[in-house]
Length: 331
Image 1 (cartoon, helix red, strand yellow):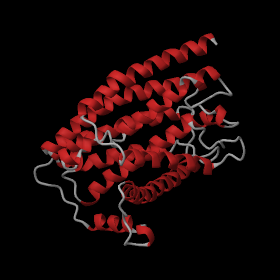
Image 2 (cartoon, rainbow, N blue to C red; image 1 turned 60 degrees about the horizontal axis):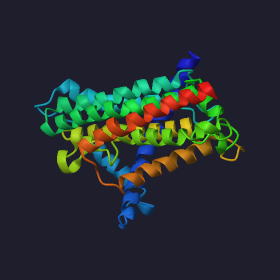
Image 3 (cartoon, helix red, strand yellow; image 1 turned 135 degrees about the horizontal axis):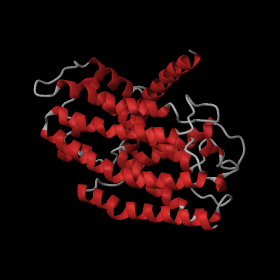
């Protein structure tokens, strides 16, 4: 009974965390986009436009929820949930500090990737159920993109698992204690030979996480200039809002995994006073980098997107995996 109560409280906290972050990150993205493009961004509603997202959320919730006549009603209603629920479940096993984790599992890394694979089903079902040609094209692109980029991402994660000998996210962070020279991105203090491989692994993983969350320059599933709003085209009000929250939740999950696997999680760069504040600093720096990349680089083509994975990232990740096995076995 105590475990059930703990899980319910954890889910409530996670949902509140996702909602607050979605509101804050939308403001940060709009404000950042303004400054990157030499504009002002939101400024009228609240100080520095901080309440603009709240007002937009109220507007979305006040709109009528209706199902268009030509869509598949079951698939149309299920799709937004398949985007948001896997992201919420992934947060359950993400450790923000040594003791701040809803449910620590010794196979937590495997659980997150199992739920992440459901995410693309939401886009696929949403596009197919909408019976809209732009949404169907978007769904097809989303599936091909997800298949292409999940392969190098998983191969890269295997190199981390081979190095740490565990799927427990908390244990992976504990092994990176003692300063930034022990972090998996550049493990000079633990295995100097792996310091040649792991920065490349981090770049591959971070690039794949951008593609997995459909962020520019890899947002081919929601290429507004070509596909209107992609799989979300037929969704009104909070149907669209749930898709939007799911997208930002997946960004947080991707950046949190990058922090845990490569940047030492809650460990201090100087080996002193570890804590949740270090985790949040690294997390939001990575999220800011994601926003920075979106508003700096133009959108690629679908052929360039797939060629980057199949011809560059997958061969590099396989080569990285072979080198990791050789270094760990021989040295």
